Image 1: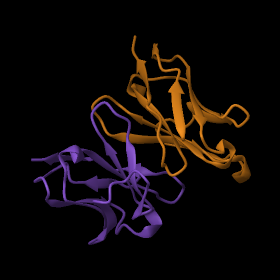
Image 2 (image 1 turned 30 degrees about the vertical axis):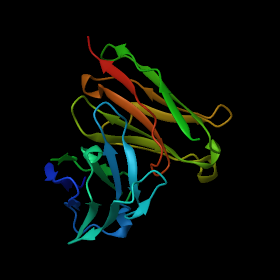
Image 3 (image 1 turned 135 degrees about the vertical axis):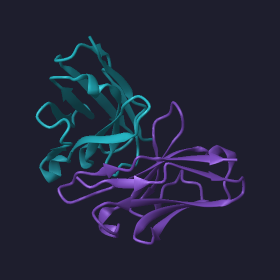
Length: 110
Length: 116
């Protein structure tokens, strides 16, 4: 099974921009992996922010965007707010329909 | 409004069985695949398995860690998806979430504790 890698932790200043990445031990991440991004705050269920690389949901703040960067999936937060402090997980789909999560990135807004 | 409500979490002994339910509302349940995920205390998210819609044969897939022990089923008339867990191990202790195809919508989770 492939291993999905994320930065363990990142810090961003309020109003700043930060990019979280999601890599695969099996090679470059592509649209065929259908990258998803989730936000999870302590004691809460995950919330889907981005589907299929870059599709936002009605509840996704406009400051979040999804893309590819250097062979990885990327989640960019532009104009960080204190409420964006959370754990962020990516999810990649592989052949055989068995999706794999990254280990998560703890984002601190400080 | 889409809602997913899990239930059935409990404290169980190793080797025993437990069935979780996820009751859905606010969308055409029968048209969607449904998935189960879990999160062990202080750990990350793990995909458990999914069941496709009947239109796609109701196909099921499972993570290697639960295959052969867990079974996902659905009752479209009741808009419920089930997770039947047998041969439970201490490492199955987690909050279990159901989610709609995607996943886009998630339930609030139900805690399963496997301990003697």
